Length: 353
Ligand code: P6P
Image (cartoon, rainbow, N blue to C red; front, side, top):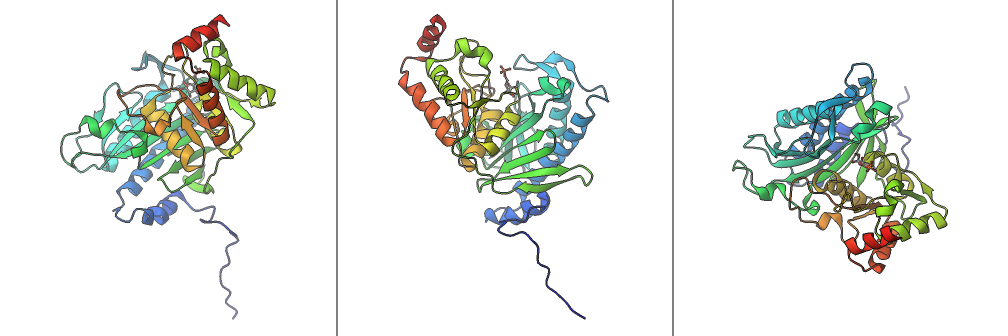
């Protein structure tokens, strides 16, 4: 009888593609020498909620859960039914998992204190970003940041547990509900992407160790607000056009960010007259994507400084966001710095043309 050793054909892979998310989390747990598995369990809880939201998203057109919910959230944005469902699903999964003490959600005015005296982690989440695209079947996403609480476990939640700069994140990720559903996350040791196999109900490692190209030929910005851009943004986008770059903007941050991360490119949501601090929220959108970007060798700034350095001052505060390939972000930053005028003066000059 002949016995031959199993030879997996995974040449050069740090982790064999096809590894399930659960197995990968377990394999990577050793990155946290003193971890006792809570963060791993928390990541699994998020993945479970993502599977449920994925199912609801796919059924939206059939199960009468598409469309508007008839209320607006603290942002003054009309809540879509799936926004509300996703918010409930993620909060329920995080509260049942037992690892989380507090949640900041785009859909909730206040911080949710889970009254969990053993919870070590705080989660900031946008349960379903880009939800106005649901009715027209465009990709949407979930964005999450994970922090360790600062105050003693078991004591009342304090502002310092919540208002942490993005540099304090212990993990961050996004779920992209697109032509396939993907979960991409980092714990500070690189970025890995998992694709959901619906027939098996499992996420499988499909994009190990994602590294963003240092330069790309794609720029993502809403050209409709061009008259309100700062001069530096106008100059940079004009340069992109002169270089023959392609404009790709689908109005769904996670989808635009994910494409630029893989192919190279820059996404810009600048300060405008309508949104003087930008539109995107710091705690549960910009910080998470900035952590992932930097872990993948890309950059994320507010026009001047790293997103991850911003000290939050309010729960739902917004920030301008320039994120993507490092050389493109640096070029845009330098053009903003060249136009030394203060933001308001830049924009009024820009409006005067
Ligand atoms: P605008 C969706 O509402 C979102 O938060 C991002 O997903 C998207 O990139 C951006 O806003 C689109 O905003 O003003 O260009 O429609």
